[in-house]
Length: 415
Image 1 (cartoon, rainbow, N blue to C red):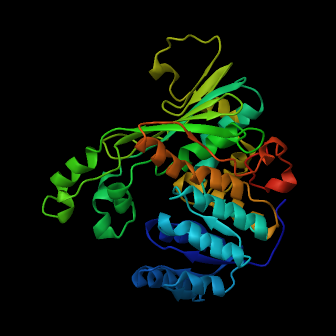
Image 2: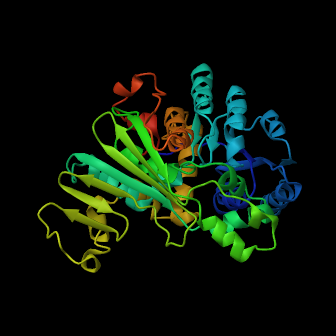
Image 3: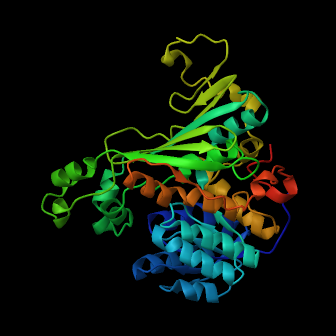
């Protein structure tokens, strides 16, 4: 049961589309419920910081510290810091906050170097202060239902998982210079699995990664980069951007091998026309779940059933296998992205308020983030295998229990 506390004082760094949206859909509702006090806001763009500070003041009557310098937020000593800024700034800000004794909730996006991942781990081990990756897809309704079914052995022994960030982002990337969005520079200059955590976070939970299992190697290959070039030449032909070359391949495929024998396939597909999907798939010896079609297929059922016939049949399993997190959440649904923002942010805040290890701890965070630089290395070598570090230092073989007391009320492993 959640304990009663004074409001948690929270600082926020990064107030673009994502950060500003989180303030409106998650943080301010929690302020109104008495769980949080939003004490400091920061963005390198004055207008963004001022706009959010104005909204906070209008709704709460108290104006937060408003600054362009994240160091001023850290110096104000919030009890928790949210890092919602551009990808390349995440680790540096998080490390400084952790060294100041402030737990960090960090938005998603891959790291730039493996050393950055080690910096997070070393800082945690030196300070005891965690950085939790705020991977909202770990709290998706179907992702958690599939996890619940895996924990109960419904799908048998799990053999393979797949997922993707399958999302047409051409307009966002193509107008990044106009809208001050960091994705554009990443697509111009990098070629890697740049956004692996939406798909990999839920899969790590399913496969017990860092808790009795680990990822060993990855191989990444990328297609050519044609989608953004075509889009920009059609929609922004008078812009200097139309003359630039994009480096990020249109479709990036990463294959991962795990210590316990499972394989994982991740796909980044964001610069060609397509419908949205995360492609979440779990395959076991007794059955499977597939997000595309939202269906479950069990051993012994007809192999050649029409897809239209079985599409959506996963909902029929929800009465029995809905995850307890979602059973509770659906009594009072609130928050962005169909509730998954609300769930992951509350999980972070509850871990701070109750002094618990966050459900996605620093070792998990580093493991998720490292896929990006490693995939870039592999792609540059034509898909050559690259070793994935063990950030737990061998402790993954011992971290096989998930006691409720260590994982909190929204713990991924509290089934």
